[in-house]
Image 1 (cartoon, rainbow, N blue to C red):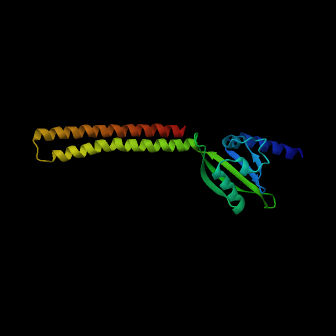
Image 2: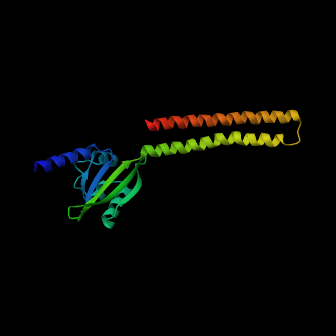
Image 3: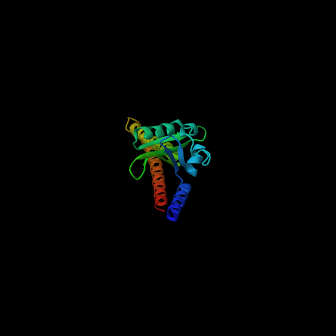
Length: 193
């Protein structure tokens, strides 16, 4: 009995310490376990909401659908959801059936992984790529325009002037590429740390 009690205490410590949200719902649609992270993400009270029907307590419609689907179809489910309208948070939700020692279903387990930071970084990367594309396109277009004009029937002095401008844009393009390579090296060094 002491070993079982120690094991349960240890399991409680683990779930309390997890940064992922953890919710267990039994076959009667009642919340049987909720850890600190899930309570925070879903604005639930860990003490008061255990034993209550999840449909009454969980406000997020997507999460409710996931739980209902797992309990009904008894198959694992993974989906990205958004919680909050003002302070948007994004989660990868993984759910699966919980079974006892004789493989009989007793409920479902939901694990919520916060991917908000990753989403923000993705958005920043998209903006960065769009800006870099624009920055690269400008000198390339200029170089093409200057060379095309220099190929026309214009005085030699003007041709040289346009070739000089094309060369300046080429230096600008090289400078942008050097900056990108430096940034890439810095990023690679940070990933290795």
